Each structure stands twice: as C-alpha cells, then as structure tokens.
Image (tube, rainbow, N blue to C red; front, side, top):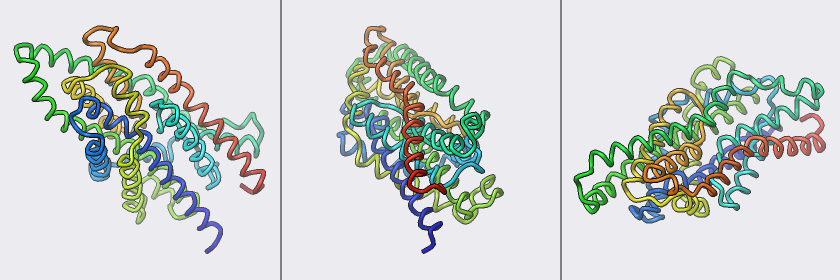
Length: 349
C-alpha cells in the first residue's frame, strides 16, 4: 500500500471517529427533552434518535457538506495532515466538553479545528502575515452569523409555539394535554433527530470529500457536483457513524440539557423539539452549517421563558454561552498545536 493511500485511509477513519463522537456528544440534543419528560426511556430514546439520524441520509441532501468541503478553506492549502490536525482539534474539544457536561457545538469545533490547522500550515509555509489568506470569507460569513441566529430562531419558534399552544389548548385539562403531547413528542423528537443527522453528518461528509480531493480521487468538477462514484460511500459512512454515536449516547450532557436549563413537560418538549427541527431542516436545505446544540438550547430557553423568565436557570445558560464563544478559538488552537507537532515529526506535512 502506498503512503498516499494509507494517509487517506487514516484521514477518513479519523473523520468517521469525529462523526461518531459528534453523535455521542450531541445525542443529548436529540433526546434530552424526550427523556426529561419521561416520554421514552433513555435506551428507547437513543434508538429512536439514531434511526432518524440515519434516515436523514436520504432526505436532506448534501448542501451543508458542499459548504464545508469547498466553501470555507482554500483547498489548494489543504493537505491530509491539515485535515487530520483539524479533526483532532475538534475531537479533543468535544471530549473535554463532554467530560465537563457542557452542550457545546461539535460543528463549530470541527470548523474551528479545520481553520486552525490550515492557518498553522500557511503561517509555517509563508509567514504569519499570510496565514489568514487560507480563509474564504464568504463561506464563514453565514456560519458566524448563524452562531447568533440559530439559537435565536430556536428561541423565537419555541416561544411562539408555546404561546400558540397555550391559547389553543386553554380549555383542555392538564391531563388531556399531557396525554396528547406524550404521543406527539415522539413525532417531534424524530423530526429533530432527522434535522440533527441531516446537518451534522453532512459536515463530516464535506471533510471526507475534501480529503478525497486532496488525495486526487475527486476532481474540481466532482467537488462542485455530487462527488462522482464516491457519493453514496461518503453519505452512508457519515450517517452510519453519527447514528452509532447517538445510539451509545452521552448522558452527562443529557442531564444539563434536559433538566438544568429549565423543567419541561411533554407539551414544552414538543414545542422545543419542533422549533429545533424547523430551524435545522431549513438551514440544512439552505447549505448553512449551524449548531444543533445552539438551536435546541435556544428552543428550550424560549419554552421555559413563556411562563416566566425566572423559569430559565440563567446561570447555567450563561455558562453554556461562554463555552459556545470559546469553541471555535479553542478547537483552532488545539488543531494548530497538533499540526505543529506533525510538522516537527514530518517536515513535508
């Protein structure tokens, strides 16, 4: 086996490992509300979420993957070593925040890691003044804007659905409402997991496609199209990895998302999941890589705030927001450090 092919295989395996950890880390986003309202047991909830994560492969297209694959970093400056270092930066940050129980964005960790490794290579090759030339501003603009917009959309939708629901159901008894929404929450949880799989698995697809391009297995025309003969290998491998990660789940973050931000009942869980699902599906179809974590957190806050602002534990929310702010620079710094280690060991990287 030649060195180039071996390096490509390692890159793809690291990418799928990240995808698995994305599902593991972000499983809480898909199932926290349905578990905290006791509509499903944790075991059934993760199986339900994993199924819809995989089904998203056939529903929501590849627009986000194309944004990640060729719209954020100049591909001429990307090598397999850059991809590996970027993925390692994201993986380290995901594992740290999982250990701390913080629902941060695996998506933004990936974007930050990818950029940090590419910037480090450019700085080492051309000098620090040229380091940021690898960044494609148009690809970053919508991503950075939606760091703010996605949770706000989730919050507004969650608040709107809650207000509308309370008004429409004002004459129903609490027991009747609870019974209806325990069933409806199965639908909303499935839709949210569909949006989660459709948005997050596509980010790994974009990274794998970039690795195949760098190795010479995809042409520029393939990168602008549907990845030639590799299309379904890329799609199915990414969705399988994220579904397996979701199935194994990360329970530390479930506790934060499901009970520490605000207390939810089945009606509130339905509103939060539906708000998150609409936001994720819309952005996936538009090719905007957003954070599933930010989206569902905003939706949960919106649902909690409909009763009174004090129902939201703002101290927990503030801690989460700080973790969001740090995600891109922290994962970029880790990835840059990893790339410098690779360059020290292998100067041709």
